[in-house]
Length: 77
Image (cartoon, rainbow, N blue to C red; front, side, top):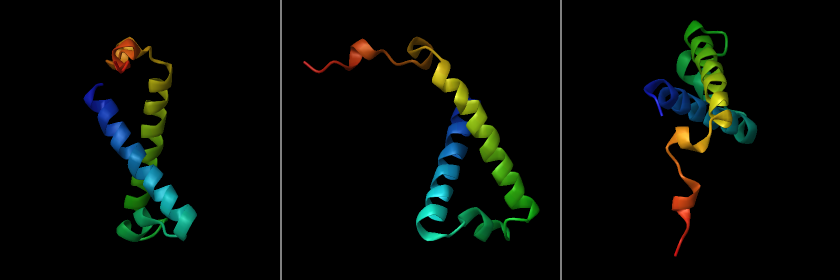
């Protein structure tokens, strides 16, 4: 996994946690940290999370050999 994909994965996790907080508690952590949903920094974070999701979308279509995982190595004996 490249550095860009790792950064994208971290941003995607941050976005998922933020959406979980919104869904369960009606609390937008990104907006709370960066000054509201309309604040420039919050909009940048939202945009980066969206781009990260698109980058990670490519991981769904990569063969497992390219991801460094081998299904046959996971067998428990």
